[in-house]
Image 1: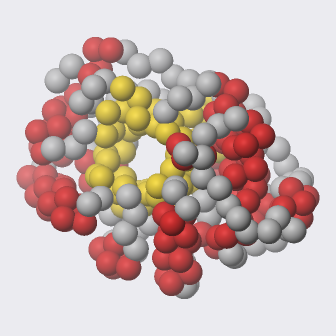
Image 2 (image 1 turned 90 degrees about the vertical axis):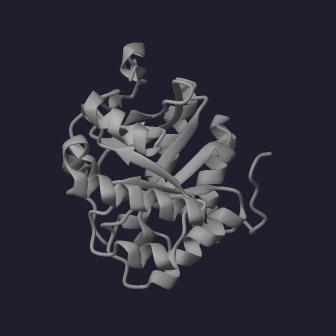
Length: 256
């Protein structure tokens, strides 16, 4: 079923006008894989310059005055390219919590883009990073709750790298947690990291949250994390982000 929004659309034109920025950008896509059936679970849309340059080259142009316009434009660009590339998995889109002033209003542009470009809105997963500084946790919780109520999944990115940690999780329960690469790097040789991830798995299981490992770089890390019980992965081991295209994954990468 396609997600709908019954809020009046009187500000949608304003949203579209606000998406006019004084710089251009595009997207790369990096797959999230499920090793259980060797499938692509999702593609994450990642900001890039129009020449494929880094996200940093774009974010240096983002400031308080254009943050909302940039957030809206990113959503539209991600959905448009995903539809053009024929992505048939989920699509992970990053959002900026401080750019969402009212979730029921700010979601309209996304829903309209999904309708215009023919991408199923129920396959969109919204994620935000733990490193995003949010002065009002209740506001962020309200965004997550609203997205869930209208059918979107949500995820916390870079979990374990920021200032919030378990305090954030105590206030906001998303559908997915993406473990930061710092916690999984060389985990096969680090009993402390294994203990932390094992505890996170137990916690997430009790909270009905899916745990995913990001930043995977080696088969040793994959074997260790798979033994612990993780089945969703993202990282250079499987594929680097592919500019305006979809990466090819070596089937042998799934072999444990």
